[in-house]
Length: 120
Image 1: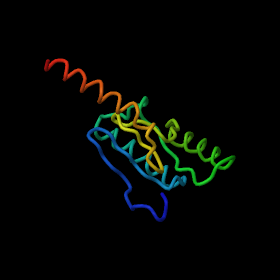
Image 2: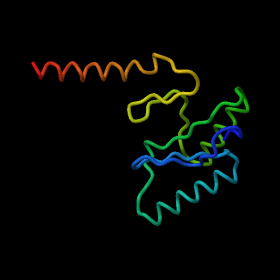
Image 3: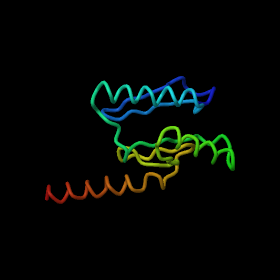
Image 4: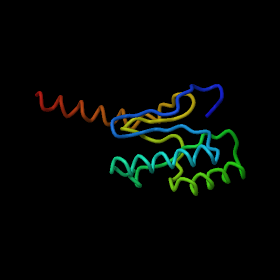
């Protein structure tokens, strides 16, 4: 987590969960143990098709690739990159880019056209 960023360490949305971590081995190990404890206690399992991690790129190149490989090994999660779509909305870093919203705008226009046609 960026030291200047918000001090949020998790967010929950219905049956989704977003966890934030520094990415060091101790934090990731504790995070994974907690997820395993939750699965054992609740009987629910993390959907392997949906689980992934994002790494905010403070650097590029060899160290960044090495960190991604380590996180994949420690978590078993796949690595995703920004931008990506969550619940139909684009999630990205930086300034708003109109092309991130092109698919969403097309879907809204198609729905609106369908509603208008049914009203006639």
